[in-house]
Each structure stands twice: as structure tokens, then as C-alpha cells.
Image 1 (cartoon, rainbow, N blue to C red):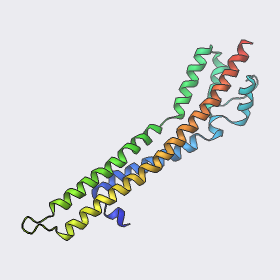
Image 2 (cartoon, rainbow, N blue to C red; image 1 turned 45 degrees about the horizontal axis):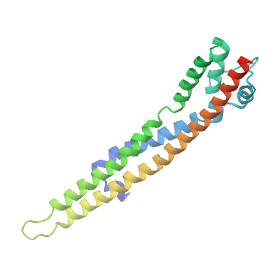
Image 3 (tube, rainbow, N blue to C red; image 1 turned 60 degrees about the vertical axis):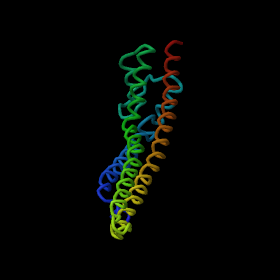
Image 4 (cartoon, rainbow, N blue to C red; image 1 turned 90 degrees about the vertical axis):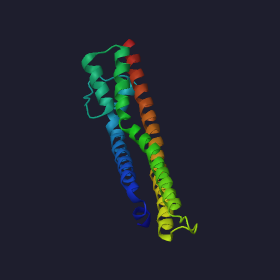
Length: 187
């Protein structure tokens, strides 16, 4: 608790960054579950390239692609464009993690500079010695904001890397399925 208490005014934007990172991470983990992207019944249908008789629903990414394919009978370019839109929807909000990754350490650095400014402004011109209270609070502010900024940015960086890799992996699977659909359509 001392870290939070000694972070000064910087605790509010740092807490906001932390809340955003946690919210986006949890929301994307839920949204990128296999049942929300490509449920098992659709995997087989996509791989075989045969969606006939499949009751596709719009609750999953692959389901929306299958509905688009079944209802509109699009050409190859239209289907690929629709697939790119659906894949971009899977990346929704992940850019906010990038913002947190950049902003949190900078807020920590700003707190560090502010704390050091407080330390150096507490030196007495007459004696050349610092005021102990000002010195302690300035150093505490400097160190605690740095710790908090990094403690927020590092997990956000790990979550960002994981989520991007997850989206890439799922997009590759969807791409293979769309390619199989197109191959089946031309045969």
C-alpha cells in the first residue's frame, strides 16, 4: 500500500491505464474463445469446403462468414474482403494495450522527474542540506511511480503479444477455411 500512497497524483492515470489493460485483456480473451471464432461444427465444414445444409449462426466469426457465403454467394474477392473485415473485428481494442504499454512507463517517468524536482527544490540555500521530509517524499514519488508504470506496462505487453498471436493463429485458420470454400466453389 505504501507504493500506492506514495505515488501522489500519478496514481489516478496509472490506475486508469491498469483498468483499461485488464478490461481489454479479459474482454479479448473471452471474445477469442474457439466457440466465438470457429466452433467445431464449422471447422469440419470449412475444411471440407462444404457448407451446404449447415445451419450457420452469426454468433461466431466463422458463422458470420458462412452466412455471408450462403446468403450472397459472393465472388472470391468479396468473400476475402468480408473475411478481412471479420478478422479486423477480432483485433478490436488491442490497440489500447499498445497505448497503455507506451503511456504507463511515461507516466512513471514523469513521476520520477516530478519527485526528483521535489527533492532538489527541498535543498536549503543556506546550509546546502535537504529538508528530510521533502527529500523522503520526493524520492518515494520518484521510485513508486517508476515501479507502478513498469508494473502496468510489462503485463500489458505480455497480454498484447499473446492476443496478437492468438488473432494471427485464428486468422490463419479462417483463411484456410475460406480458401477451401473458394476451391470447392470452383470445382
